[in-house]
Amino acid sequence: MREADQLYINGEWTTPVDGTVQELTDPATGQVSGRMVLGGGADVDRAVRAAREAFPAFSATTVAERIELLEAIGAEYARRAEDMAQAVTDELGSPINLSRTLHVPAAQPKFHHAAEALGRMDLVDRRGSTWVRREPIGACALITPWNYPALQPAGKVASAFAAGCTVVLKPAQTAPYSALLLAEILDAAGVPAGVFNLILGRGSVVGDALNAHPDVDMISFTGSGPIAEGVSAAAAPTAKRVLTELGGKSPQIILPRRRRGHRRRDSRVLRAGQQRADLRCGVPHPGAPRTPRRLPQRPHRARGGREGR
Image (tube, rainbow, N blue to C red; front, top):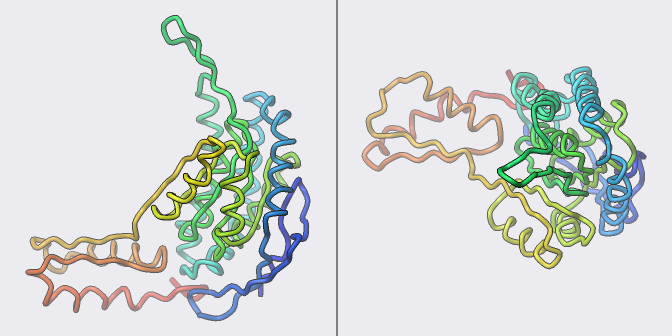
C-alpha cells in the first residue's frame, strides 16, 4: 500500500493545508493500491510563490550549469529506474515488463536529450539587422495526463529546466506515484529549492487554480480538447502563454484490403490497448462480420500489473 501523503514545495516535503485523502485503485486488479492527499488553492499559492522566488537565480544560471544539472538528474533517474517501473505499474496497471521496457526507457533519456539540445542551441542569434535573445519565460505550470505518467512529467520538466524556468507540476489525479518518485529524484540530484514543486489534487481544484493564477507565466497542458478550452479561457485574463497537446484514444483502423492473419496487426492492437487502458477499433462495414470476432482473442490473454509479461 502506497501512501502519497505529502506535497513537494520549495525543496521540502510538506503536508497540504486541507489534507483530504483519496483512495487510489490499481487498474490491473481493481484493488486499492494506496492513498493520496489532495492539495488545494492555498497549496497552489505556496508552490507558485516558491517557483517565482526561485526564478531570478535559476534563470541566471549558465548553460553549462543547467547542462550539468540535467545530466545529474538523468544519472539519478537511471539509478531509480526499477523503482520508477514499479510505480508506473502500480498506478497505470501496465504489465511490469512494459513499464521496464517502454515507460521508463522513454522517460529517462529526456534529461540527457534536453541537455544535448541546450548545448547546441544559440541563445542569441542575428536575423538580418535584428538580434534575437531567447530568455526563460518564468514560473510554469505543468499539467500531465495519466496514460504516460513517467514520460510526460519528465519531458516537460527537462525542457523547462533547460530553458531556465521554474515549475509547478500537477500530475493526473489517478497517477501520482511516478511524479512523487520524480520529486525524490530531482531532490537527490540537487535541484535548488523552489525550482521544482509538486502539487497533487483534482484538476477542477489544483488545475483550475494554476490556470488562473496571476503569477504563473506559462501553462503546459496535455489532455483532452474540452478541458483545454477551459485552460485557455482561465489563462486569458492574465495573458499567460498556453501550450497544449491534445489527442485521441489510440485509434486502430482496419482497412478492407488488409492481409488476413497479418501478425503485426495483433501486435499493434495489443500495444495500443495494453500500454494504456482502452482501445478504439474501427472496421469498415464490409469487414465487420468477421473481424471483431477475431481480433480480441490474443489481446485478452495479456495480463496487467506485476504478473504481466
